[in-house]
Image 1 (cartoon, rainbow, N blue to C red):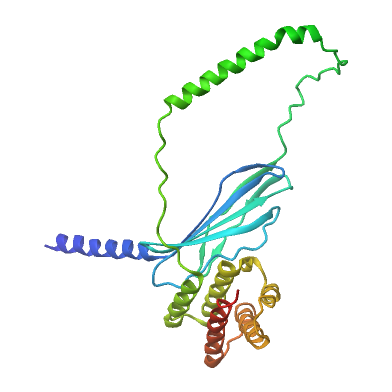
Image 2 (image 1 turned 180 degrees about the horizontal axis):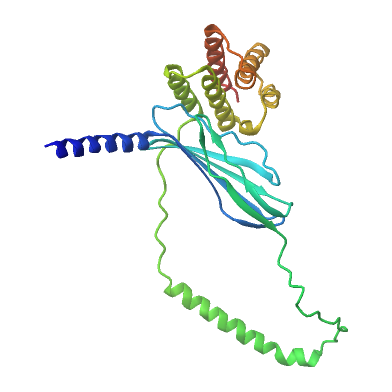
Length: 292
C-alpha cells in the first residue's frame, strides 16, 4: 500500500513537470553553415515559441562582432496548437577570417539560445601544387575546326535524346502542400499581447521590457522598420517619418524612454506612470495602424 502511494505521488510530480515544460516559452537559434568563405552569406534562423497565455515578444538582436547584416530580416508570426511561433530569418556575412562564436540571444524572462561557433576562412589554396608555365597563344586550325563540327552536332543530338527520355520517364511530382492557416495581423497580435501584459503580475523591469518589445515587434511587422535592433533614439527618429501628430510622437517617445530608464537606470516609476505608458503605447499602435 505504501509503495503504491509513493508511485502515485511520483506520477503526479512527473505529470506536473511535463505539463509545465510544454507550456513554457522556448527560444532557439541555428545557422545553416558552420564554415563560411570570406564574403559568403549564411542564414541565421531564430525561433521563439510563446504559449497562449504569455505576452508576445522576440529576442533583442543587436550588432554581431566580426559579422555584418545583409538586407532586412524576415520575421513571420503563425499560430499553432502550442500558442504563437515567431520565426526570424537574418542574412549575415563576414570579411574577418578566424574562429568566431555568435553569442546567445536572450528573450525577456531569462531564456537564451545556444551560442553558435563559426569558422570564417579564405578559399582553399594548396602551396604544394605545381605551378604551370605560361604558354604562347596557339593559332587555331580552320580546316581542323571545319572537319570536327559534326562531332559537336552529334554530341548535342545525343544530349537532346537523353533529355527527352528523362522528361518522358519522369514521374509527376506531388503538388506542394499550401499552408492555408491564416496569419495573425500585426494589430490583432499587438492588442492581444497588451491585454495579456495588463493582466500579468510582473515586476516593473519585466513590465516595461515586454511593453517595449510588443511595440517594436508591431512597428516592424506593420511598417518594416528594423526596430528589433535599434536603440530607442534611432527608433524615435524613424517613427517621426510616419506622419503621426507631434503630440502623439512626443508621448510615444517619452513612454519608450521611460522603459530605458527602468531597464538601465533602475528607475522605479509610480503606478500612474506605468498606466500612462501602457495607454500611450496602445493608442500609438492603434493610430499607426490607420496610416497609409
